[in-house]
Image (cartoon, rainbow, N blue to C red; front, side, top):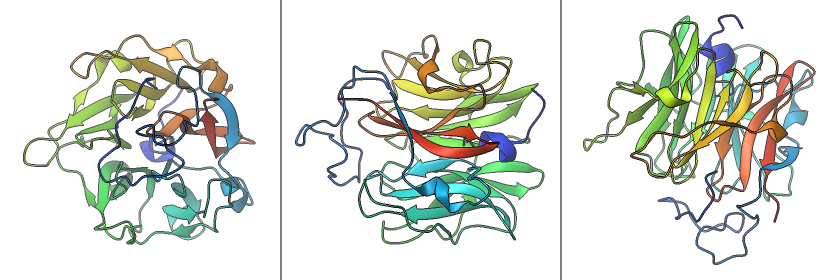
Amino acid sequence: MGHRSVLAITAAHLIACGSFARPPGVERDAAIDIDGSTPPRCDPSKPLGMLAPLGNINDFAAGGMDARGATLSPDELTVYFGRLTPSNGFDILVSRRDSLDGDFSSPIAIPLNTSGNDLGPSLSADGLTLYYASQVAPPNSDVSQSVRASLDEEFSTGAVVENVNSSGDDGGGSPSFDGNTLYLITQSVGGYDIFRSIKNLGGSFDLASTVSELNSPNFELKAVPTADDLGVFIGSSRSGSNGDSVDIWFASRATTAQPFGPLENLSALNTNDEDVPLWVSADGCVLLLTRPNVGAREIWTASRPL
């Protein structure tokens, strides 16, 4: 597998089972059973499967979606995703629907897009911060963020996240549900590795360090933590993946002070091409992912049954 930029692949593709606390700032929503006040929508002991496209969102690209990363809002009614546009390279677009069974609206570009490539979006649990990859100093990308004051506003301006980026290619930023940890992908010798940065008492992130137990000599393309940060989904082309491509893997740990345990290939979710996790719901019932279709990357979901 040859060298490919994060802008072309990493940011593009930029559960532990049990009970989950409501993330700060997330309002009650019938789609997510956080505290048991509504019937659970899945059995967390059952494996993820039930693959399906994310509503009608893939229908808006006549030549194929070819998504460069995607993320859902906590209520799963809004999707942000990266896609090649006719006049401005890769941009982040947004689309909304009125209900989980409703159709998404026609996607529109959000105000923060620059003249360079912007892609691989990932929302914080409160919906107020958007992490993404931006080509600040071509040809490399940096993990950047945009913050808004309320959910009624759109993300309008962005800035590079201090301390977490390297001198090479960086992307795939994924925050933990409490907002105190940021997982990202950094260019390494021969590929890309998973790094992690912890937020300090001053509110900024410390220097990122490698998550060695999740890395391999091959490509690691995304790390998506579960709500309690005791589990993580990753995209990896490590030994054991289908062919020479990228599969979705999962690892867990007993406490956040411990390293993650052995990785398990989630074979039921994988094809012979690139399959990469993007976002997971707070209850662990839904995993957002990209999977191939006629040479393009489409946005799909994998769900747990009741």
